[in-house]
Length: 113
Length: 110
Image (cartoon, rainbow over all chains, first blue to last red; front, side):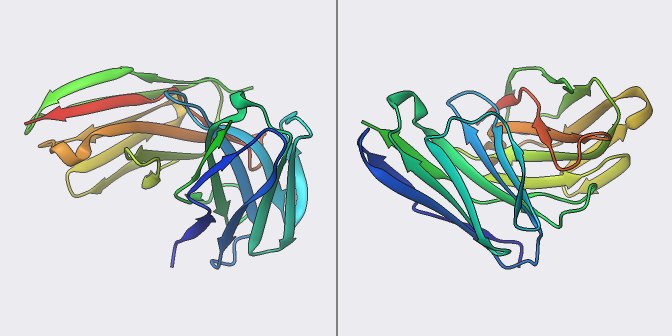
């Protein structure tokens, strides 16, 4: 099983709402990632969790708050977002050692109105 | 940080034609993968290829790590090959930090 599952697939939220994106993997991977992708652009790294600890934060605004409750789950909490935050949010996982394949979920399409 | 450039940025092929996509990177890498992003946004793993050559059906890839480039070959293209192709790298000093290339948008027409 090489599956990374993301929910919801689509989310529309207002600028004052609080919502969360969820990601789950059962491959025993110890590194999990959040990426943001705008139209016609490559994915951009937001956060990396390694062994359930935040190891990389690419200077992401605090209105995005990641959480790794356990080694299988990764959340992205959203609060007070702006319309320009509308994008495809991709979760990924890898075994956690340099040199291993990274697997992506299908993504969550976020629209901020 | 490491720079990853892909060429060409756009490519239109007649069904059945062959093509070569290129990925150049500016520093040594531990990991290089090729992905196909379908119109629904999903990134599908094609190859994990930090060095050497691999083949999978009509697709093959070659990475020459010492010269800092990788090539993706698509033979006998089909309309289902349409989408965006990305290479992604982890450089040797950047544990777990994956950087995507600029992408090649491929359209295969019947």
